[in-house]
Amino acid sequence: MLQRSWQGLRRLISGVPGVSPVSRSLHRHLLLWLLLPQLVLWLAAAWVTYDVAARYANLAIDRSLYQSSRALARQVKPIGNGLFIDFPRAAQDIIETDADDKVYYMVSAPPGQFILGNNRLPAPPPITKPVLDAPYFYDGMVGDTPVRVAALYLAYGEEGEPQRMLVQLAKSRASREGLARRILIDTALPLSMLVGLMSLIVWAGIRAGLAPLARLRDAVKDRAPNDLAPIEIESAPDEVRALAKALNSLLAAVHESVSKQRRFISDAAHQLRTPLAGLKSQTELALQDIADPAKLHDEAAMTALKARLKRVHESANRSAHLVSQLLTLARAEPESAAAQGRTRFDLAKLARELTAEQVPRALQAGIDLGFDALGAREAPVEVEGNALLIREALANLIDNAIRYAGRGTEVTVRVRAEGLHAVAEVEDNGPGIAEADRERVFERFVRATHEGSGCGLGLAIVKEIVERHAGSVSLQPVQPQGLCVRLVFRRAR
Image (cartoon, rainbow, N blue to C red; front, side, top):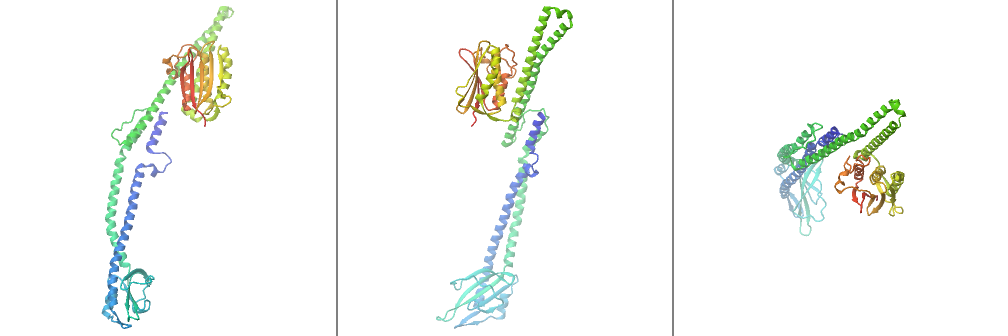
């Protein structure tokens, strides 16, 4: 049992078998949850940086395109209703020759009718009433080359015949994207170094923070199976101290359970030794009497032999009763009780049937045994639990009453409903139990009287069974004399 308890503690510290190593390691789990947000934030920061860099690169390129389109517009001069193109080769070379990127231009009048340029540029977005002498910027394609275009609408002609001219100047977006990439690289490299440094700090912090858990694991792992002393981790954080306290509570419960089992085994051995020793001595004497033929015809010797055989029978009955009680107590233990099924049953019907079964024994003992349903015949008092164990508890109470109440007494069994609870009582008008002994009698092998042939386990079994069903048991005095044992269970909904 101790070995299984320590194995459970080690599983609690190390993780549950069958779970993947990543989810089983708290260190990896924390590291993953702390580094993943950093990675996501780093990617988001890189995207925002690139977007901002692209917008600022667009502003710079748009300003350059606007200045170039104004210069190009000045080379086309309106004369009356016509246009005079003063575009020398030197000015053309200035516009078309760019050390960094390819430049395209086009002049059309009316807009869309090509009159000057080196390529047909994409038309600007549809505008109902374009503002004259104000630039419009948009993205387009020249062949397979993505470009940034500046469009400028200008007016010319006579007053009665106004006309419009469209000047377009485009530049490849390669320079813009290159500038945005350079800004991104210059920003991302220091940011990556900071993220890496922060990751190292987070890893070291997690390692230092989880060190008390490692010490707690070592404290549990290095212990012997029979070492149930409390775990001492006073310098650990509050969370680890809380875990250590929980483990200490578990160790204390295991220690108490082991101590109870040891005491129970010792007491059971002592209780069994007495009737078995008497049984052995009486059988030895009886065998000696039978071995002497002269005593077989001696009336006094035969009377003594019958008395010895009677004591043998009583010792055998007491041993059988003790073994039966020990088996019942073992069935009422938490592990055994949990393995047994629970059903819904009528407590009043169970108590009535059990009382009827015990009437012949009560009559033989000179006791008036009866059942008082208090209206339970018409309204069943249903509870949910193990009917066999609850029957054993009631049987022990009735057995105690028959054993100790004495001849000429009355024993009454009652069952009734009180709100959300079901109450079962076994009352007698015998000598009762002294107030000082009413708590002690629930302990194992404790008897309040030396009379009778009990073994001191009846009330201990009752308490064990009732507590397994989340109920309560109490002893109450009866006036002018007597004892009432009261069991309280939850009623089934």
